[in-house]
Length: 252
Image (tube, rainbow, N blue to C red; front, side, top):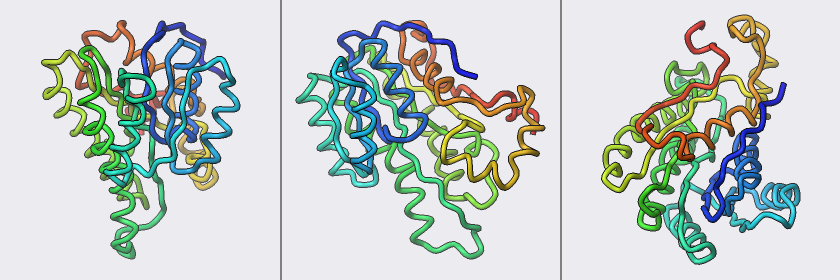
């Protein structure tokens, strides 16, 4: 099942997107492109950016930039490049994420720090760098996770970092409200992406049984929420988290 296309007018506005090669961020990039936005797409893997740019075609105003969001200097340089290319940063969507397996009792310091560095520090680095280049009336959307609310067996760095992202979102929303910049989060549940498919092989049947809508979500359905949160339709919405999980959050 695909999400119905909703048209927004982002003409002349610029999106700075991290993790653009991932399933959900790629869908966000496509929807914003269809809505007329300029795109500054970043990802750790240059080949994924090349593939996405090829899908978007020549009709979209876009730039791509390899980026490790755990490196604050690299993030600052990427945001500066976006400003130089398009003039300003209207929307920020922090889609970069790392989902690694390992229980706490045998977890190495490296695995823990890597998960927090990407999933939490990367969000902080991105919004800190972007804010000086955002006009009043801009919007920030942080991609969190249902795991940030409920925890996730075998994925403690991921769930802990995503929980912190939810708190960071609420704090940031208060700090930037005087500039009429809004900051919200999206907490996806089981979305049909490569990250989730491994989990589905382990216990997907049981999880789908607990999902009231009885299916996986699509990246396009999450993208639609991100676009809404950046649009004027959400002009009085800030410091909130929207769950996109087919009801799994309340049912499980």
